[in-house]
Length: 355
Image (cartoon, rainbow, N blue to C red; front, top):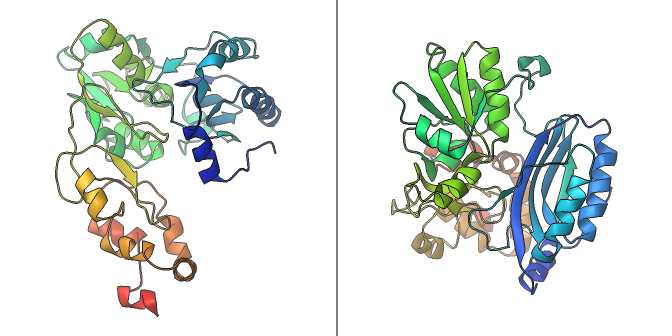
């Protein structure tokens, strides 16, 4: 399979040494792709030649892409996208805040679905989805009496930023969220429902699933939070989305209105910077302020900090003895709760680390 096998650290170093600017963008489309593997390889060859980076999922149901494109290659990239079967007239969403360091390599994977939902194919009909609302239409609809605003993202996303009146599911995955929403609002199927997510892709399935379950008036924010932030700023309106928009790349977030609405999971100070625990065998996703990042050396706990101080051979031995538990810990969990630490980060006593 076509792929970049250069060492991660070397790729990141090359990125930092680049002398040109990059643009971070995203797009998706539900479209039938007969041969996803062949389609994937053709995209890889084209985009690799343009020095594009990103994370792209291809499936028979379509494509979902988050990318970093060299600014001097942007016009060529867009022209080639336009000339690719099934991808013409693609709505492109550009990052709200862009330092050009969102990705360091090109990864294109073939998946069963472009958004994992854990649902059978007959659970929804993507030819029947909710009404698409523009940023302004969504902005105004939020204020309508009796309207329910629902966040279709995971809890670690809504914790750092959300629409002011939104109901946010305490979900770790879209699979969990979509089930929670239908259950939570089962007795309110006649209400006006407004859905939103990062770029719109999850709302397509969520709205279709809700209509399938009898909800009568479902609308979704077209282009998601990314498009909303851009349009509302251009119209010089006060954003009804507060805080930071979580993104699934190296940045992990981009501020929409400058507010910090979350807190450090270790000391409780106002903070909205996500990080993955520096102990790679834990890799817990959590919010950490600058002071705690320094004192805890980027780790989520004293246990993990102590592990990172061990010689590499002892870390490897410890990793081997706890491999099954650490494999589970890769699940995104942004809230450091005792029960989760017990479940996902079962460790030997610290004294055993040096045995």
